[in-house]
Every structure is written in structure tokens, then in C-alpha cells.
Image 1: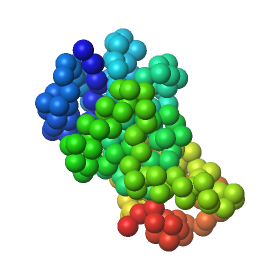
Image 2: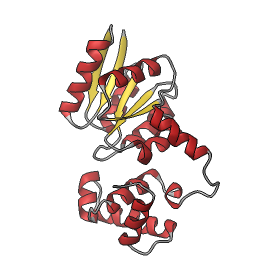
Image 3: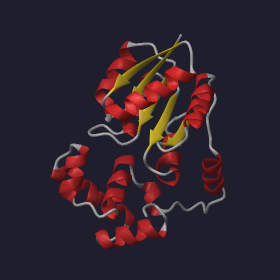
Image 4: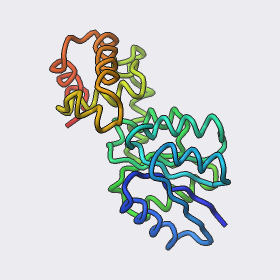
Length: 210
């Protein structure tokens, strides 16, 4: 029997994923976790063949959880399922050890295909992600400034570029305003930009936000 852990802070998403997987993969047992802390507790205590992990959660982010899973269970496949488009976080996720990256609006059969591949120890790479990866290989060796940011800094930069205030970001990520302000300062220092307007212009120009 396959044991799969579904991690998402929205109950309706967890139940939907569980239903799709239970109807198409047999025999199967699906456990659920509401956040990163609960996910790590279950991963460390249980034996799973696969984790389906949301990228954006309050507190510990999906990327943080992915890295922690790979540290303690390096052979455990992890599929990232995210509301973010592939060009924003897919490469970072794959570099961190993910077995695949899918947008939440993907069709159920694509999810099942990705799960089947991950369970066999293979990576699932969609056609669009393959193009992004090819572009990465052919890109200029000088990294664009957002590539030098940490995962959390990059996440905060995208939220700033989307027009969110420091207070709103702090609330959404369950961090203090002081911590977010520190991230913002580090982002500006590393990218050599002066203010939020420059960050927003850069993010739009590089198609990191709409």
C-alpha cells in the first residue's frame, strides 16, 4: 500500500487532492498535514512513499519544509503543488530536491502522472518547465540579481512587488514586521536597488510578477 502525505493549509484543497489520489491510485493511504511543522512531525514519525507539498503556507514555507525533508529523508520524493507559476519557483524547488512542480490549476490526470513518476523514483517535468530549464542552461553565466537572494528573501521580494505592505507580508507569513523589514533591507542591499518601486519594476521586467 502506498502511503502519501498531502500538505496544504487549506482543508478544501487537501480533501480534493486526497479524493483524486484515492480514486486513481490503489491501494493507497493518504495522510494530511495543515502546515510545515505538522508535516515534518509526520514525516519523521511515519513511513511515506511520497509527499505532495504546498509551496505557500503560513510560518514555515514549502521550500523550507522541502529542504528539511531532504535533510532527514533524502530519498523521500516530494512533489510541489503551488499557486505560483512555474517561472517563479519551479527552478528553486527542483534545485532543492523536488521530484516535480505543478500549478494548482493542473488537471487531475497530470497530477496522477506526476505522482506515478515520483513513486517510481523519477522526476516529473512538464513541457513548459522543460523550456524554463533549457533557458536556464542557455542563460548568461552572470546571475540575475533575484538569483542571489535566499528563498525567503525572494518570496518577500515578490510580495513587495505585488504591492503588499510590510505589515501585510508579516501577517501572511506569520513573522514580525521587524523581520520582514530586515528581509527588505537585505533585498535592497543585495540587488543594489533603492526602493520598492525599483523592485517592482525589476520584477515586472523579468516577468516574476504580473
